[in-house]
Amino acid sequence: MNKLVIDGGVPIRGELTVQGAKNAVLPILAATVIANDECIIHNCPALRDVEKTDIILERLGCTLKRESGTLTVDSSCVSGCRIDEKLMREMRSSIIFLGAILAACGRAEVGMPGGCPIGMRPIDLHLKALKKMGVDVSEEHGYLKCECAAIKGCDIHLDFPSVGATENIMLAAVKAQGTTVITNAAREPEIYDLACFLNMAGARIRGAGSSVIVIDGVERLHGVEYRIMPDRIVAQTYLIAAMMTGGEMHLKDAEAAHMRAALSALSEMGADIRIGKREVDIRSTGKINSIHILRTMPYPGFPTDIQSPFMALAAIADGTSVFVENIFENRFRHVGELSRMGADIKVEGRSAVVRGVKQLCGANVEACELRGGAALVLAALAAEGRSTVSGTEYIDRGYEDIEGRLALCGARIRRVWV
Ligand code: UD1
Image 1 (cartoon, rainbow, N blue to C red):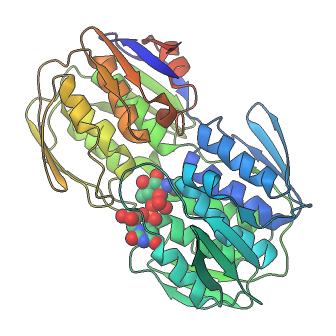
Image 2: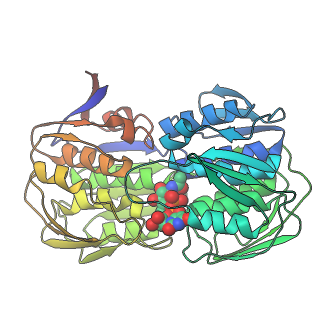
Image 3: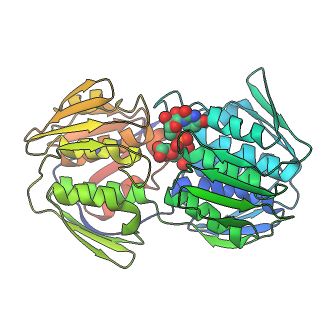
């Protein structure tokens, strides 16, 4: 077990290159299974969730080779179509393998997925869509069993623009008979990245990034060399770190077009932001304004994944901010820990009222999910005195070497093993 020890109050200043996006690399790695060939993935971040995905790929019969940020996956010998319960429980996004394995093997058997404890996270939309595509789905002893003679293209309307369901349908549809049309599809940039990967591998997908995606089934895919898009949530986390500590940051490989909602909120809260070609600069003006109301929404709305880091920022703003969480029902678990550091936050159902305080104070706190953990690190960077953040296994799911990156920008942060 380890924890982060942070001595707060030091301005975060410097330059960082944004890591590859977790939420793009996971479905793309699942998609390599369908290629039945060698895929070379660049800008692949070293994350716990990627390590788990690597294990799943190996159990399915793929051969993997990693050289720093490049992962080569050879799926020409895929032999398995089963992912055991233990692996599935460790990572919610493992459900994406369902569509990929079905496309590759025509059947799949996977344990029910797990993930961060931020809500119920059902998979009814995934299963309803697969059934419509001709897949027989049954559940036995905690396992989902899926089988079909052939996956059939069809029209699928999603009741909610679920990211995972959209990706699963795309993966199942690439080699289906006929055309699949997804309406009310999720529009996240990571969906577009997955479509780009699949199209380079021979798929025929149009409209990804919009709410209507059309997939014409093809006979087969082939190997491809692909670079993962930058992680917009990690980029935003580092921008907030600079703003909360009165510092400044130059982010390289940052796609501002993917971060419009958060950049606009940061400007409203007083940051000086400059946008360049694949780069973003932020400079603190010494003032942090409260934000009137911040509502999480599907993309291009305000991302639920950056809600908790923004709450850490609002905790030291001048005035009162209101947060409304519309995506996950249990995504205020960081509030208790921020309060231990002196934040004044009241939660009522899906809303939180944050009254800014002059100064947070260092405390021993515990991360209990990925983004909430990042919020605690941010609060600790801005707090007076020493904090320890445990539960680093959650933070490591999505942030590559968080202490190394922040230390490069002047943070007094280190990891200690206990
Ligand atoms: C993905 C992201 C996660 C992000 C989330 C929302 C990955 C690996 N994870 O998660 O970081 O926070 O999108 O932007 O990309 N829902 C249902 N039934 C379903 C599927 C979803 O009711 O079958 C509900 C969920 O409970 C949740 C909402 O829809 O309330 C959004 O979920 P979804 O978009 O599917 O998120 P994930 O794909 O799990």
